[in-house]
Length: 130
Image 1 (tube, rainbow, N blue to C red):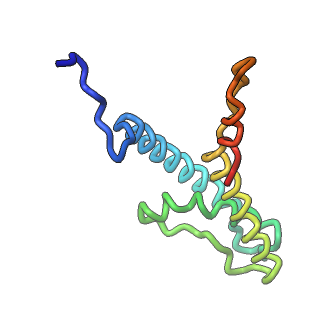
Image 2 (image 1 turned 90 degrees about the horizontal axis):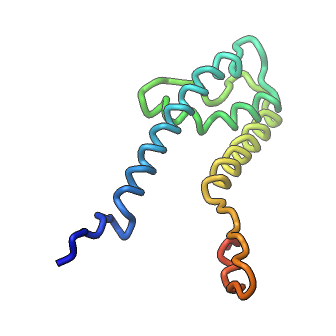
Image 3 (image 1 turned 90 degrees about the vertical axis):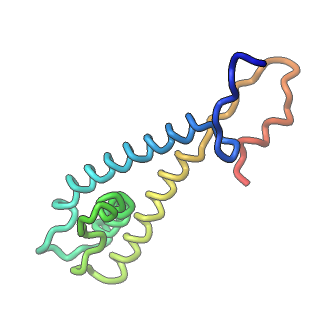
């Protein structure tokens, strides 16, 4: 009988990896909520009509509002006093830029270093997006 046991896993993923990802998600959520709480008063002025620039900022900040919304805080994610189409274009671009940065960094993996002569060239395709 072996002296060591196999690590506990769920769906083939080690429990340690799952716990690390959950803790990281909670920490990132708290940080995003704090950043949003600090930026919100400056990004949603009451007396200014929001245009393209505010639309970009509001769209980029909108995903950061999720932790606050989940905790029951009613935070702004869209300016009712906006310039119309230009604000909406900026808002949409801001959301997409935020998604590219967040999901791009979450799924990007640095390429493996060359292992020298005779390295398997068949692994080069593994880092490419599909």
